[in-house]
Image (cartoon, rainbow, N blue to C red; front, side):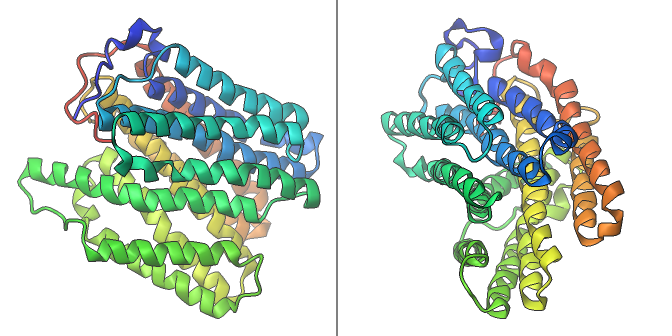
Length: 401
């Protein structure tokens, strides 16, 4: 299904003619800036303050920008309504930028910074809700859940930092919201994309959505709820670990039914399988950490989900959507696999720095360089497509986000 009126959307400047153009560029630039600014912030402020800003801007700056690009564009496909473009997109971008400037000016933990930054995910949720209601697609309302979670978690994050210098619960709440969305939406999209890929080759198709999917989602949501409460409630760690390991095994079994091994020749598709794999991997790491009481391993869970799940998956979605919605065939541009590999290398290095502190001085900067290479590479390869007019009418698969 193609996006309505994407090639003529209100004759806006190209970069404002579709939300994915505007917000993918903003997200990539911001993803670069947050990591690049880390060493300078550590010198100017305390390590705790720098870490709080870093986590805040990735979770509440980078992620909502990607969400805006993907969901606003996909909503037009789902509803058949005209694509939001021009002044409304510019206004949303200005609101997002205001949030970034407010946090940079007033700091994480300030009331003003929290109020201004919270406006973007809240307004974005309202805009999406309006489009879904007017388009009579209330069945898609659950896609807004992550925006509601981020809208709630953001001021809580500021409150925790103001009170204790760091966030524990709100940071986990934001990650849980993102992982829950991936669990549900990627569980729809990845099998769909895989079926298209295998059908074109005449191969056997993966399993359709059934009780196994419902069971894995239910177990996964229970495990996420358990994980988020671990630092707050005095839960028996071994019991919590068993719940999370059960979720990991269930989701690995779910993913195996999508036959990821048969998609490795298509980087745009295979990387989505890899990104989803970070979800059960995180459950396994968190569960093991809870059972053997390993704080460093528990901390590594956050990076598995933040870099491997969120970073890799959002980069994969941005590359795929940029090609499809600018009228290009869904074939990875030369060098795209290297972008994905750089994020995976960043994940491995960052986890290594957590688990082997003696190597942190080498591995953590290396992880940062890999992240910068991935998102700098995205801007170099896909940025020109985002600022130029469509090559043709939308590709037939463009509406499949």
